[in-house]
Image (cartoon, rainbow, N blue to C red; front, side, top):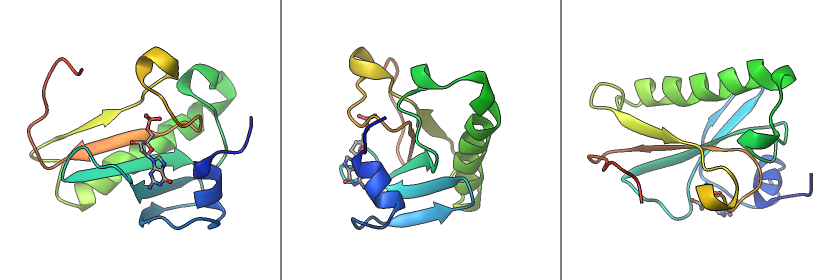
Length: 114
Ligand code: DGP
């Protein structure tokens, strides 16, 4: 997969407001927040999209979701609730082709999404 802006953030080549890190996952604030809390969680291993993920990456995908959930709990967001979103490919609204989970919180979410 070609290099993305998120790969550059992992390598610290461009700045980001990093709020979570472990061996496999990085979390940083979205540049264009859509809610009072908007954090992106990405695997350090590049996976282009959810569609590109395979069974060998099941554990990593689990860690990605659990990292987002742990962060939300730790930040006191879990009780009121939050939304975790993965946009996949063009119709899904994906613009950066490094798999990421959007964690959105701090306001009441609407359904259906636009
Ligand atoms: P998506 O549309 O699901 O691919 O989401 C990509 C998100 O990435 C979008 O909400 C804006 C965010 N984003 C794009 N470039 C940067 C960047 O350089 N830094 C940060 N922090 N976020 C970025």
